Image 1: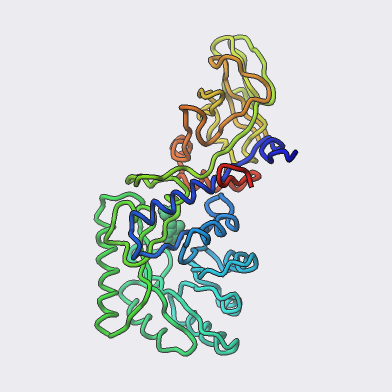
Image 2 (image 1 turned 120 degrees about the vertical axis):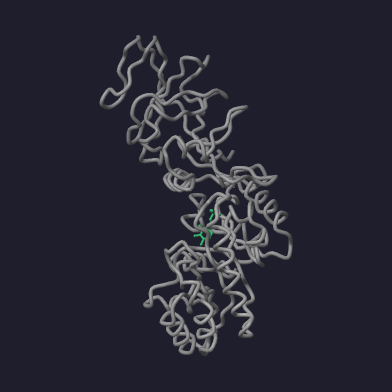
Length: 379
Ligand SMILES: *Cc1c(COP(=O)(O)O)cnc(C)c1O
């Protein structure tokens, strides 16, 4: 009989593709069928595994996939993905040939980029699609909104290239500040300039997860959700039907009873107050469990929370299980996710660490072997 992969692994990240599908549907329902979906699979799909997630999203009817780099786009093509792939960062000029060769749709934010694409398109006999990346306030990458319409018109006048889309990106990740509204106004101003000059751009997009939840006037005709798709709502709120996709499991490796005032783990930063039962788990910062959780985080064992005690080591962490009856070596431990009535979310871990939840997903999801679940079964 085939043994489930999760039974052979001590630590693993479970990626629930059924929840991913549910989240995709929930977002689609929120924005309506007129609005296209360009889910983001950058950073190994926020730690969930880029190729597997991309395959699932393609089967769910995603219109386009968003990646950070040409290298990520190339991997997806090599894996046989036929969907349009938007490269959000654009490309180094030396990568123009790869962009055209792989049929990627890069962000473009200056004329040199467009000229390089136009040239390679001519050489390889292909028409290249691009999206103009407009900076409306993030001041990171993109053509300044004041110059954007002019650039779009120039790019569109080059041979072998099509301005298929135009987009911008929010500064804040929660609603309720004036900058968001100003960004939407600036972006709309660019669009109105294009309209005045008679240029039609088929795809217009701005909304990330926060935009999907809080700003319907940023949806235009395509949205680019990331964290919400992975079941992690932005601070500003949630929509119905969203469930976390990633959970992280370990197991109790050893148990010991210790007297009061026993110092634990490296540097003896923690001392027991009472006679305690301490469980050693074989998971540490090498597996993405941050050292910032030292005497700070919690895990779930037998449906109850157990605090992390002492510093997180490279391959181990200690937890206090004194208050949980019947803990045994080999018991399943939930580092991230749900067990019974208890749930530890990426948001909780992120707040304990003082980082954003994306960072938690990326580290935990990318440091451990991933087990994929679909239709309730391991793949
Ligand atoms: C990462 C990213 C997104 C998605 O952001 P979420 O907050 O995870 O939804 C959207 N657009 C761009 C340009 C991004 O870099």
